[in-house]
Length: 165
Length: 409
Image (cartoon, rainbow over all chains, first blue to last red):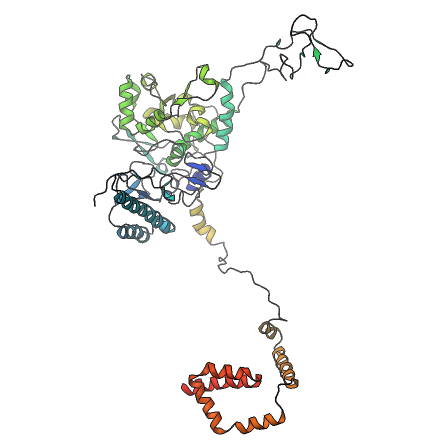
């Protein structure tokens, strides 16, 4: 009984292993969260998990800058971590960023169930960046503001060091 | 059968792909049974224990005897004699100072565990299979984002390196160095007495290098923190699933990778090196629930989905709710109306015979007409006016309303 079709355990099997034991799991009194990359809500559920599925959507903040990195998982290269993710830096205004994300997901029909989650995450990240920018201009000092928007708490705080107005 | 298994490219020490590729050994398709791995790991971990015990004489080296009753002291055995603090003190009991402990530890405790051969092999096979699934390796905590492929197979040249410097260079080139950096970052002093028992530092586990022939690999890699070395012939579950959790980052050499089929067998062929062993059968050959549910064989036997949700119906009382009542008994509406009218009929409304006559007189053609027309603009007003008087006239007011509407339309 060789598993002829799949070259690795199916996402269901992987979920059964990961759901309770994972280095990314954070079980807390209020909620169970995960810090794995490409989990749009940092929720420990099958649907939102960022490791298991061949098709995966990730939205992260650009380090030391503005904008958002939108990553999609390549189905062909599941076994090749170097090529696995196709990352796009979206650094224009938020409208363009969000439409880009929305269209990619919708037109390719790529994990449509994650569309709203991706948009919300991008929106929250961008908002945080905007607020950080305005707060630094207001104080006219270069501060590394660690704004802990709820969505950003899992990752390293985005630091906006310089503002060029 | 070989065609259905994918090819794994071999990489050289510079991290570039050589042209060669190897068929994925069947071990990597074995069922991943974390429960078996956990159990076997737990049992195996006990096998390195060294016996410890408490001295048999501890706490027993007195000739204490109980004083018995009647002496206003507890009946615990007390030390004989006098002239020292110790005399008269309690002895022997686990509660006594200087007494023997409860259940003194004995050397003949069962320290080691026998594990069934089949279970041991099953666990090992599961651990190897899990090392080939990138998500499980990531979940274990290894940083493999920069590794070219999982499972990672390097040329046999790796087995010949002699210098740690070269080993580090190789790890850097194949993208495994970030995992080692994690190990460096995780170094800290152990909590507990192990500190003073030669187990001072603790750190994470990094990649494990599995080789076929040791021409220097072991010595080259062994000083790099976190790295483990294993020979294919002697794979160790404690190294492949450290902590009892599957998914360690494994770096194979080409000849080691090729030996796996011979060692563990494919399902169609038994193992050549292990007596009477073949890979364990999975319980589900196809575990992809998504595909199963969409498959024709299942869909064709299902009934149509019930999409309409039956929501909770609030039960209303027909005795209070006239529309419900008339649904049940259409005549009820009629009954109610007639009783209402009867009630109104008998009521003293303040209309005497004279007022009736006067009202009839007032109901001239002109007045009616003016009322009707006044209803065009002053609908509300007329209704309030009418409401003040008899109920009969309220109905009239509504009548004018409707007539006005028809007129305007």
